[in-house]
Image 1 (cartoon, rainbow over the protein chains, first blue to last red):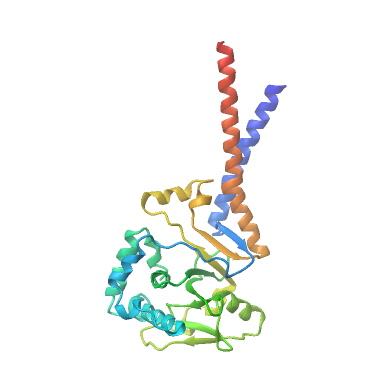
Image 2: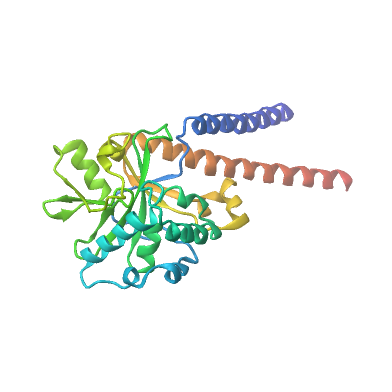
Length: 119
Length: 179
């Protein structure tokens, strides 16, 4: 009797394992396999990780981009425009891709291979 | 993400936002950056692909505010594009730009590099090392969030526990038989 129960129990464990793999496969095929956490406050998530060697960016970025303006808004717009016009060559057909290529190599070396796809 | 890294180097709090028009498709997606504005005490959105920011009554908006405004508040926003001939235009994009804001996800990237990135594939462990998305509470997305946790953390943990216990019992029984 105990042996029979044992077999059913083992069968259930194997069943759960196979079922899990099947569900995961279906979710992956449908591109809805995502590690998502639900939050109540949109601004609460501040620490989202950074590349360990992102200080290397200081070597290649121009001084006027690294230096902060007094006005937050001006500084942000300046940085945004720099990235959009100088670095982002993929969509802009900008022939001057030097900055982009340098950043790409730094980020790729630091495990950020996919980063350059999603500029 | 390059913009995010530059902003962090400059001392700002910045994060990456993943936009997905519809769950279940990998195609109509976009990525933007958000930076924390200490004055407004909120994040504001920057799109380096189109060199634009979004305003509402002269206050810059974040991706989630744009989503709410676009979906529920009669389009109360102004898209502020900055000059630059070499930058792509959002209204020439292959898909309606604003429809990309249907799903707004905050991206937390994994800090693992090199071969350690393989750890992200292992159930249970991946919970602590994998990259993650955050989004505001939503009924539809809740199902996917629960399924992921259940299938990649709780069930593998349960199975692992059972394997350990069964192995332990088998070893003990063998020892008993030998004695």
